[in-house]
Length: 241
Ligand code: URA
Image (cartoon, rainbow, N blue to C red; front, side, top):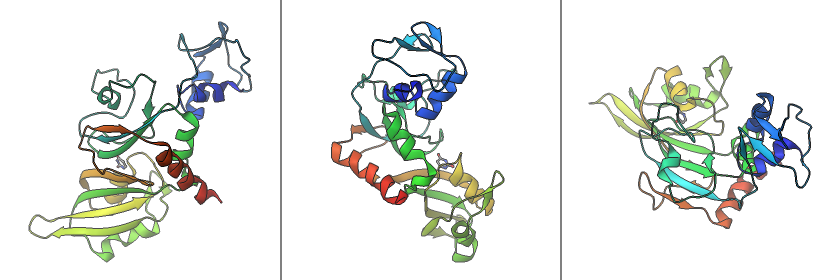
């Protein structure tokens, strides 16, 4: 098995992240640094990433209702609380599938399955992600229309999104809008609303593919069952056909 696939299978990182680790010289096989992405791992080989041996673990999948004030990574050099700190009972080396901002709440999947992660975050697979944003300004068809056509953020146009106006509050001068996108660019929702002059002051992800937050309070997590995991696989496969 190729080294990046082996690392992804072991749940250490997605395949793409594994390639980065290899290029950075952080991966060894039997004590020798590997820099060649085409290197294969044979049975009995000892693979280490950043000095720690890696093993293939059972694949596990969790759904977290991410609260505000935690970061979506495995560790933080500044010692801030991470989403991993919210699942202390999990023994496997899980990590978040994509990111939610520090102040964004809602649906976040965590797993040790690198192939699953790649599939969920690949834009080609068009998994719907639904966000509810409280924005400045009074939402209407005219000012939200650019979101459905695509707006330019970081020099690149977004794919057409769908919206649903949930509330318009003229007294407070703000609105609540549901937005469905299937890309996952950095700060995408905030930047999309920023691009139409309606900055976001509160953001929650209410759905990721077939998953929603039913039964989970902020900070709570539960394990996904096999059916839920295959539904997510199908949500991705169906779009690639
Ligand atoms: N878009 C954002 O702007 N922030 C998130 O956390 C997720 C999507």
